[in-house]
Image 1 (cartoon, protein in one colour):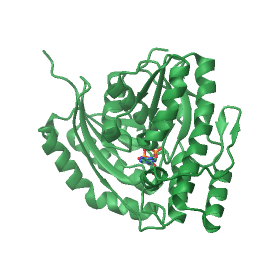
Image 2 (spheres, rainbow, N blue to C red; image 1 turned 30 degrees about the vertical axis):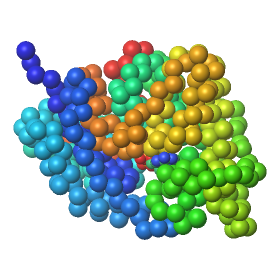
Image 3 (cartoon, rainbow, N blue to C red; image 1 turned 90 degrees about the horizontal axis):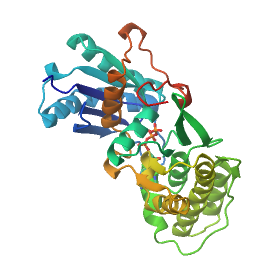
Image 4 (cartoon, helix red, strand yellow; image 1 turned 90 degrees about the vertical axis):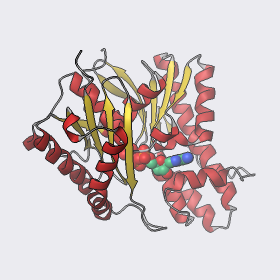
Length: 333
Ligand code: ATP
């Protein structure tokens, strides 16, 4: 019997350099990562993060192979996040992937990072045809699969939910990443401070909310109350837009994924939305919610099995690659 295909996946879109090994049976044999952390009060500096990635790349790669108990010669395909993301970070991961694919003489598989979040979440939860709420530092999108592509039914009109939480946390001098710290303080919140909730059709808008929350911080509002209010307002807007999409599409599954999916209050709100519409609420396990090599390795398996690959000399990175432009040959139309 032929053995299962083994794919090595490399993630490097922003703060995380990750390497994972996945098999055609859906086993994640290892998932190693190293995360660049900017100094408090600062956002990610693309070149500094890329430098971090190149410094840690071989150690992360060796550890992923060791934990998976495989050697490089067992690898049948090398997948990498081709975009979207920060140019210097993407190029660092792509360079490692190209070198490995050339050396091993195996196919190079380009993966859209957001589709990686969706496919890994589907693998881990068993979701088949969900309405997906993808929330991270790079995305705030409500998507569903139709006619060969993931279609966007709602998204942010300006900054993402992750940007909102991280941006506010920076102003409040909380350590990076901001989201978990905002969540921790929000649990101590007692008063709902009025902040603007903006839903436009199926889209949300968060930049006015950030401006107002920062203004209230400057006016001396209690930080815990502000974190609580920021979460309540931002998540309510997303829940409203998601509910509209769910009611319209009549999907039976609501799948939450991306870094912000780890937030318990957001999970609670979307669970209520799903239950109101008799849909099953599914959430990506916490260890796979943030950026990781596993999302790339597993999507690499699916893409490889559908015949997707790219010649090394045409494997340019795509920092601004939209999710709804990517053909998905491995899902039924
Ligand atoms: P993308 O995956 O779209 O490229 P990204 O690179 O920011 O975006 P992720 O690791 O998926 O990657 O998400 C990181 C975001 O998740 C950050 O904004 C972080 O603050 C947020 N986050 C992580 N944990 C939590 C939490 N418990 N509550 C809220 N936000 C969280």
